[in-house]
Length: 270
Image 1: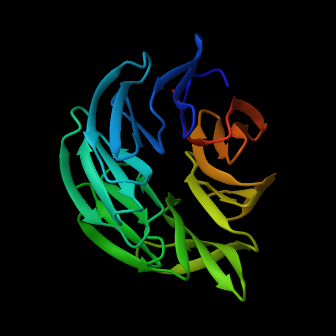
Image 2: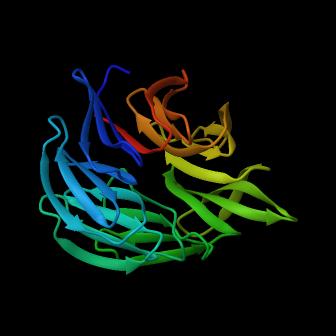
Image 3: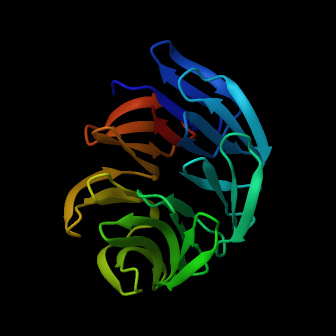
C-alpha cells in the first residue's frame, strides 16, 4: 500500500506494519482511532495510547467493555460501548474521562463529521441514529426500521445501514437521511449488514455478509465486490481498507491482502 498500517488483532495483539516489518506493539484490541499524532486502541475495558509513527506506549485509561467503534474530534476521543449502551469521551493527550452519554441499545457504530463538532451514532437495537455534538449533547434522534448497524455522514446529509426482518431472514437496507429527518431507502440486499464507511469524495461503502457496495455522493451504486464477511471498512489514501473475518485486512478495490490474521478487528493507515 506504500504506507504504514496499524491493525488491532483479537489474537495477535496490536500490530504495526511498516518498513521494519510487522511488529507487536500491545495487547489485543477491538477498535482503533487516530488523532493528534496518536493511536488509541480499545480492548478488554482499557484504552491504550501509542505514538503514531514510532509505536511507543504513551498513556492509558479505563473504558467500558466491548468497545465496538471509536471516533475523534481534535484532541477528544469517543469510545462506543455495545455492552454499556453508551459513548465515552476522553482526552487524546492524557486519557482523562470527560463525559459519557447514552447511545441506544447495543449500539454498533460511531463517526465524526469531516468538519468536526458533530458525531453520529448507530443506536443498534433501539432502531435509532443519534446526532450528538462534541460535548455529547443529543441534538436529535432519527427513527429507522429494524436495527441500525452503521451510520455515517454522506454528502449533505447522513446514511444509516439497517438490519430489517423480512419473514425469517434479515435484509440489509441503506437509507439516506436528511438532517431534517427525511429518510429515503437507497439500496437493499438479502444479506446481513455488517459495516458502513464514509469516503473523502462524498460517497460511502456498505458491507454485508457476502458483498460490499460502493456509492457515490449521488446515491448511485458505483462498484460491487464479493466478500464473505466484512467486519470493518476504513477510508485510506486513494483506496479503502477492509477487515474480513478469518482472512485479515485487504486493500480495495485491488483486493490485495496487506495483513493476514484470522481475527483482525480494525485497521488504520498511517
